[in-house]
Amino acid sequence: MLREKDGGAVAAPPPEAEDAPEVRQGRRWKSRPPGEPPLPGWIAALLAVASGALLVPAFPPYDQWWLAPISVALLAAAAHRQRARRGAWLGLLHGAVFFGILLQWVGIYVGAPFAYLLAGVEAVYLAGFGALLAASSRVIDRWRWTWPLVVGAAWVTQEAVRSRWPFGGFPWGRLAFAETDGPLLKLAVLGGAPLVTFATAAVGGLLAAAAWRRWPRAGAAGPAAAAGPVAVRSVAWLAAAGLVLLAAWFVPSPTASGRTITVAVIQGNVPRLGLEFNAQRRAVLDNHVSRTFALAQDVAAGRRPQPDIVIWPENASDIDPLLNDDAYSEISEAVAAIKAPILVGAVLQGPGDYLTNAGLVWEAGKGPTDRYAKRHPVPFGEYVPLRSIARKVTTKVDLIRRDFKAGTEIGTVGMPTTDAGTVRVGDVICFEVAYDGLVTDTVNAGAQILAVQTNNATFGKSGESPQQVAMARLRAVEHGMWAVVASTSGISATIGPDGTIHDHAGMFEAGTLIRSLALSDDRTLATALGRWPEAVFCALSGAALAAAGIVRRRTTREG
Image 1: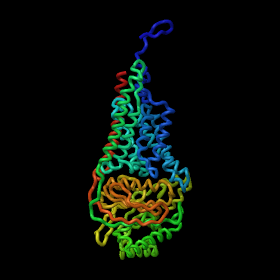
Image 2: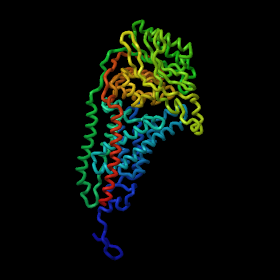
Image 3: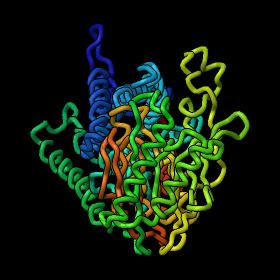
Image 4: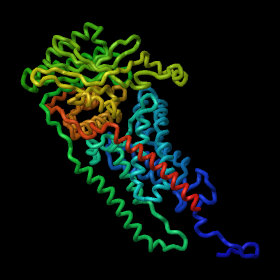
């Protein structure tokens, strides 16, 4: 081919060279893969913002689970074939919008800056996802069938990192927790939260593959000729996404087949919303004692069945009953009246200058006989890391006057009953339900039922409470056992091994739940596998990145 230049004819570069930025730009990491270009920056940015906004209503209290794969698809399409740096910015943009809306409850009583600061930190992990996805584009372009695998593995990887670091991580907003009303929840019994997240993101990858179009190049067959094959491929990708959902739907739901017990959950409510809910600590304790006495009267009158065990929430007694004689006597009277052991959520003084967030097994005539101390206190909520530095940012860190000390023992406690023997209760306190390892350790230690003790009074009537219940629903399916959520101010719930909510008490109202349920002595595949599914997906993400580097080097050599 000849091109006219300055009156003479010179050889023009082959058509392939115009589509090979690797050749023109050398071996720089910033260069894009050859072929069709990425989406323009402004369109990609709009998709990233839309994907972040769409992901919020996938979570409770909206529960539009089907929006999660669509959100992932939009972000995957936006980052595809972009440079790694731009992919990071797109992921950051998605994360800022998503977490900025989802975590608004963090700042209800301590101020919006805290919520935005946490949202910014969490968004950084999504920036890593965007960079990882953009850098893996060459693998997707070489083998288009890898798109769902790359997207799913990359999403699990960023969740794994942000669930552990810093200060033990913050797993709120994992894709798995948005799927409790959809068919993908059933996959939890096979691989826990990581598998549910992977499947959700993989469906998003399939949707992105269906929507992504290879635009014909100059000189090739026109759009009309290409429309047929493109449509067929899109239908095939959509069908694959449907098959994933259908396959998940047919996964058998777990059941509990052990002996049956009757469990009562007491939600005593609090005097007021906000940080000052515990200014009347005695009133909170009195509320739970009075609800327990009322239940005892109903049992005596035959209106309610006799419970084998009773679960009180976290912070039911902010007065240390081991040091305060009045609190000790009041709890003991409640236990004697109901004729069943009570798992009491209490704040204990010590060790030393610390506080302890504990669950105490309280028996009639014996007092506390077993305990669990919360192993994962919430940073900046129950203790302040780097307090002297944090104080320079805001003096509100001093609202936490004394730090809570982390416990060291796994939270499986024994609650002796009159007719059912000793029930092994897996105690999980508040945010601990979000952490895979803490819950799995508890189940492996012999738990037959999960009890999530929580206090959500500091988060008002926000989405925090229903989002926490969703986590408990996933844990019930993951480990194939009943879970009960006991909250001071709601939402308390009883949840079956299939994730179904059977009873619940509303927010900021008193309530008593009582239900006969079967204990679980079996273990699911997810329980047995533990962290292995997550490790496999993280390794797959690393393999995709390595393969992308190999493809890039080969492309450069060929060029």
